[in-house]
Length: 223
Image (cartoon, rainbow, N blue to C red; front, top):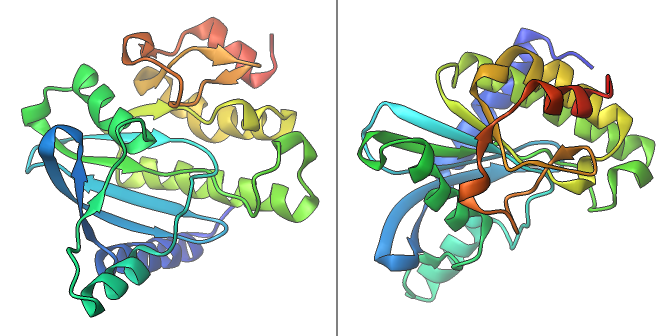
């Protein structure tokens, strides 16, 4: 399912615009405070933690992000109630883990932003149990991520961490063809589980390593 250049740019424009409108101040553990831009729907998910004005970015590619209400909705609700607009990030959350693990890949003072381009689909069933409409949503998302990292994050390190829900031949093949194949020299994983890169939750930053050829073969189904 290939996106035309026009379709891709339209999605990018919409996500970027919505994310800028839905930016919130997030308070991370250890008292660290960062602005986060976020936008998502059933097919696409985009978030960016703005760290500093550094030139190096890192992108995490997960699957089925947890969604606890629209960021813009939360912002408006708190503003109306004259409550603090900051949102608290849990210590064990994927975002906080990503923040901590990023410091193992790059000098924190050189970091510009941490991106999250999650693979989305309506519902949270195992990939192997997905209905056709949901499977198509996964493919659309992977295609978008492939084009986005190629155009906007071509020099960034990639942490691929979809977890066990991506364990289907169709999705593994798409991950290989659209993401791993062209970016293997900059893709990091936490190891494999059920033939796919492990999810960030439950993984240790010390396990983060550049993907190996034999691991690529396993994900692709060649091995």
